[in-house]
Image 1 (tube, rainbow, N blue to C red):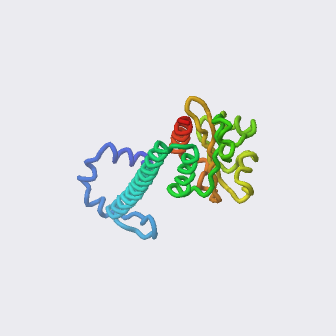
Image 2: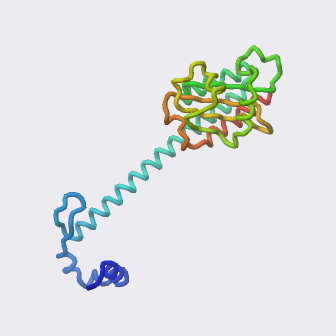
Image 3: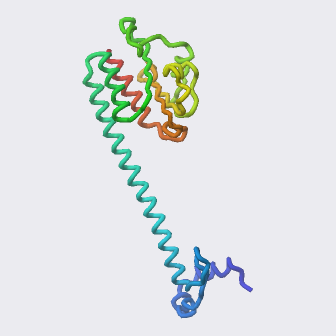
Length: 214
């Protein structure tokens, strides 16, 4: 008796068999994939093709949705970049960055710390001194970090941050690291470890370039 693998190989190597024995194949019944009833092999093939088409359509819709979301984010990033370029003071720069994160990107919580900008800006909390641990964390970030845990010094930037469940740490870096932007959310999935960080990296680079102008 031929094994199933041998039958499959024979049919692959002899495609003319289906033509020569079309009536035989039409008389073969196989189990329906969902309700178990017997159906002609041709109908079973149609069911398989419909299922493949359905999966392809689902994947295509996912790709279209992903592309549309990327386009929307890209447009928002473009608007932010233009707004940063137009600022004429550090106060305006901080305001533009904060308002864009909250209104355009719907980031509920954001904390910014910038260092090396001079003592004249000490009255702005964004330029207040940070500890060595914060400096070390910013320097150690090869790319933005997303996850569910941050150092206590960073959590303290949000006051009572016990309700926050996900975080993004974005170094402000050009030729050197001049600060860090910490984003947070009550939603554990908002800044989950598996999300892409390309836009966050660009955000850090643009913010660093904007601050470096002053």
